Image 1 (tube, protein in one colour):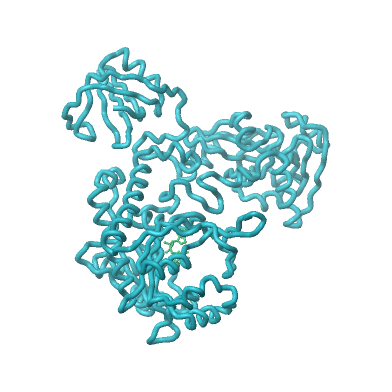
Image 2: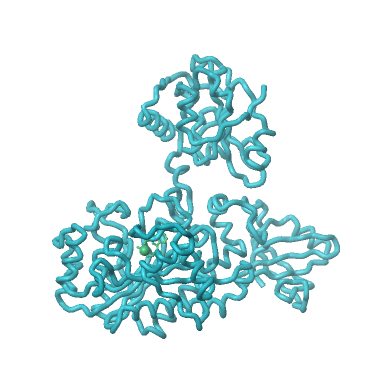
Length: 585
Ligand code: ATP
Ligand code: MN
């Protein structure tokens, strides 16, 4: 076997080495004393090559263990990893896990989530290809500037022109219906949604499907339902081990249960009847209503999914097919799963005239849609389809709390590809000083920006260099949690000491001073120049209440040669923080 040392537990006579490879974790029994000593000096991640005898074992997770091993260390690792990924469950919060994404992904549970996700994609392809007989297409991701406009698009510089990153491949899948009738794809999507919710990402993947020639648009729903069931049955068959590792059950949707289909109007009535909350005049379903409808489906139909059809025109895109029964409604649907929307879809307009009408109906100019309209001038059949988010599907199928757990390298307003943005953007003394000055000006705060001789690291020296009373100085101290390794900022008056007991109480773990070299590397700041604006560095921040007792707050604003003097009330108001007693004499 070749793999990574996951852990080594020494008990003296019997010692257990756990080796990780793509198939999971294997147990190796080490009895040799010298060998045990050598292994106990290795850290997780060391690359090992092991030859031994496999024997049946009731205690070992796989039912098998390896004895009398010959162990070759191919790559020795001696530095302990920052994140304890080798434990069954990483004992850290999601932010910390994301901060150490590249290594935390080696954790068994995280690995299981993404193995399942890969199987979902595989099952989707099998279903679309083998059962629906649809053709896979590959649409573009960089597209021309959107004529629909909207703040939710990311713009990119494209050879001096403005292009946008695609939010969906709606146009392209419709073009491909004109070619192949039934088409599908797995497409990246980009959405500049500033909202910080547990179910929105700025980049994700979307299952796309579109079909032409049906007798009734509900045939699209049949494909959607078949697709969900096919994916679930595939996971049940191929991901037993992963589901066991996660200790979670898949969402409920047996083959012999039809996913209930209710109209938007009926959905509102159900929510009203179930909860007494009246949202029947609303044009949309609230998150609470989405949750309640899934609960209703679970209790009354034995599935966690429900399809809501016939949405109001105002809430659906211009290309939605208007209902023949009621001109205010559309042949559209959302699929809700375990409380959250996972799909939107429906029938589309397919004649040139109705499409132009749809565009005008939204107050837009058909002139801006000439590319889109061409296909309707040259024959499109009745058609419809859907877009289903891969990360939403993963999250709801597995009951994950946050969509970031269902993305290998999640992007959101705070992160790009898993990495925190703020710490990168506001990095280095000058950038941080500029940002602080910008914030103060923007908030119309009175302050003085003073240049001076470089302040030494001592508080007394700093006070002298700035020409301000020692007690008016604010020390910004960066601490490190001993358990989570997370950084915190504590801001206290310059003449006082930080009270480590109070700190432990406030953050829930023991802390120590962060290494100046780490502060320099991580934030681009020299110790002594750190400003009390912790959130700019992505730090949870605390103010000692003593700061508020003084007439002024003076602090270095990122550079040793520049200070800001302002009112403590303004400072504490502008810096997102908590206040308490964190100092002692
Ligand atoms: P929501 O109302 O939940 O923001 P939406 O209605 O704006 O979603 P659609 O345009 O209908 O989204 O996109 C189709 C599907 O793509 C959604 O049902 C969802 O599964 C997924 N999706 C859309 N936006 C996001 C996002 N920001 N992050 C993750 N998945 C998304
Ligand atoms: Mn939607």
